[in-house]
Length: 444
Image (tube, rainbow, N blue to C red; front, side, top):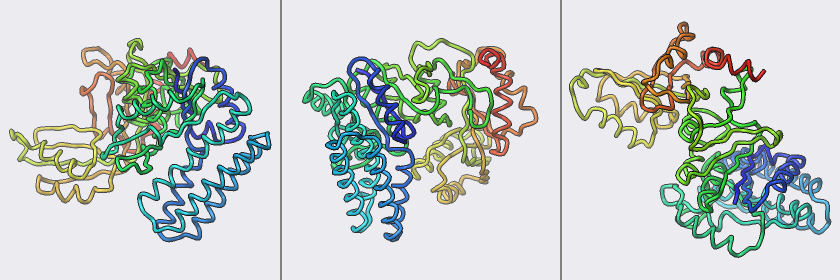
């Protein structure tokens, strides 16, 4: 069994639906196809929910109608047979009515989750109807029948495995189509795995069926060695270890959701990153047998805030850091980087929704300084501390760039440092030249 996940841009138009169908048909053996909502749809649904939350029902209804009209246009161009087009109209009317019902009811978090689920439910229905015409051997499964999370929002892996096994046993087919992102919670209400969760869905499904491979199809040919939006002459990395991929995904590589490879790593299932629009490209293979190299790739994470706590009470004191961490735990705010000295600790966060409360709680520990508009630069690869020349190759070219923090030694696969966001693009380009110049020459 192979799991193939296609993101929003991959199913963003009629032409792209057809490209996805060809890729699915060309994949041998049994497969589960996991689809996101069409590109732009999730953002529209977020906007609809926000409008309903604020009481602007009239504007929400305009967006709901626009979404329905968009779907009808897609269905008309995509589906050729009259019977299937009629089926598509029935499906679209049903989902349109769901949104209309949400607009007529008092707004709630429960209703918001229902609204957010409609994008994936529609895209998979349209794709299944198209596959009936061009293939005829696919079955549409509802992720709501097997994807399940607990009271903390964490996937219930045993429940997913047991339910999915039973669902699959009810059908004789080669190709199964289902939704990413959506699930049910502990109350059996519709919920989701948060933004980017379709990757996570694919990995959880792959782990549940012990897939031979999980394929993540996007609009870029694999994980690049640097961010192609800001740096020229980047190239696709042929392979990565799970640890390297996890570091890059967490620290800004947009092609992969940070949590998505955890189930695959635990089950030792290779993950292949591919380009829907260049299926002939090899992409990037993430697996446990990746060859060791010095440095693989660079990623950047924006919207970082640094907090420095300076206190002479830290000197020779035990338990100080524990108390600091308890503040962040209480406010459910994760820490990205941390560095310490005898009298100060600096750390970074990317969620500032509780920043004022955190600052207030930290005041009793000492002097608090906060810096904003920062970016973390993550360098991933084989960065074992006993190897010579690794850090010099990184920092020699950055002598004119102010560096706020450095985190090194916590992992053999990651060196991170903090810079002003205004310096980010310059840093990415300097590192691309100093670390990958030879490989760039080979690929250009």
